Amino acid sequence: MNNLIIKYSIPELVIVIAISFIVITQFLLYIMHKTNLRGSLIGGGQGSFVTALNAIFAIIIGFVTIGVWQSHSRINQIVDKETNNIWNLYRTTQALPQPVRDKCHEALKLYVEEVIEKEWPAMSKGNDNIQALKKLKAFNDLVVPYIPQNNGELNAHAETLRLLSEYRELRRDRVMSIKPLIANLLWFLLIFNSLMITLLLCLADIKSYRIHSFAFILFSSALSVIFSLLILYNYPFSGPQAISVEPFKKLLEVYFPLP
Image: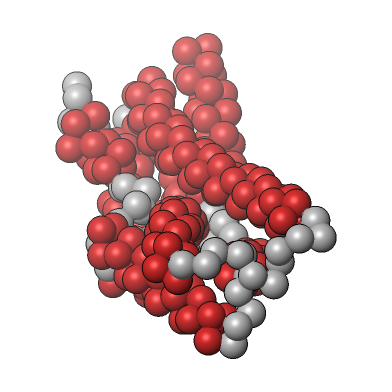
């Protein structure tokens, strides 16, 4: 599925999924009409049963969609916090004396460059990057052993250690988010329930095949839009809706050059 979202743009992906849904539902509807199973749910309270089942399915897929959307937004916020934290580290270490200050700044620049050039492309493929972690450790090894010489350096050193500890947590949260937000079992349940709802709607008592077919086109199109959103946001760092590396690029292009 990751290859699917990388291959297509957003309009192309929506169209491909919509066509797939329409073809499948129209095929099932055709089979039901040919086998004279249409209208099997007439009378006996079956209509109320289908309505209740549709409502349950709508609630489930609604919660899943909102959950994925919120998770995607949360990861995007983590990236913003990461870059803000790095910038704070960069500014705070200016209070340290030479040559420690320049070495710290250079280590941060090398780490950010590694994230932009190597780690982000690796994350888009579902992989992490050990080299970025090593370059962050290089910065850590410069800061932690340093012994402050006065109260000003002591405060700057303590603040740097605090920011570094917070950043490690933010980085871990980002790296852990390269996995799909929706588990395979949940995908199976969503697809299975969609097929069950489709079969039940095929059995509805609509005498006109043309009207029944048109109603299914509308149903399939609406359902395909929801599934398109789930697929697009399922992989936070892949596809046309992937979280951008631009905040890290701004560090190098805008913030680090500031005096």
